[in-house]
Length: 158
Image (cartoon, rainbow, N blue to C red; front, side, top):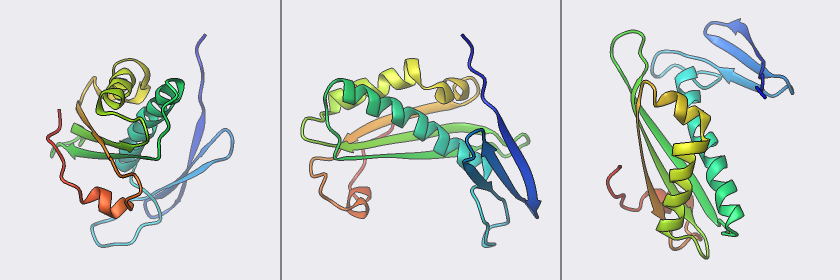
């Protein structure tokens, strides 16, 4: 059975738009030259957040089914856009950083692999036009602050 989703995007002013889903959740979108304040995320940044959220939900679900508790989980998503129009993403790099009592690199990579190959609809759509790379890191001390964790050295992306 097919699932239909619906949304509405309304122009507010300048480059500010508001998106609203069927349940009433609102997302502000905006765009401006560098250094100019905005009231929302750019649509391209929303795509990066969407792929991170989509695959992240899969990973949490897979780890939960395996009874593996997460104490820390963060997904960093970076994209490189092409210079010419349409300025779509050429490459997206995703870094999964997780920690928990029984979280191993093998378990995390297994969950991410399943998400990226089977479950994440957004990454499946993006892969049609974009190189999507990913890598995993296990944080041994999940009690570290987010800033401390983000400062840890990172291995190369797949």
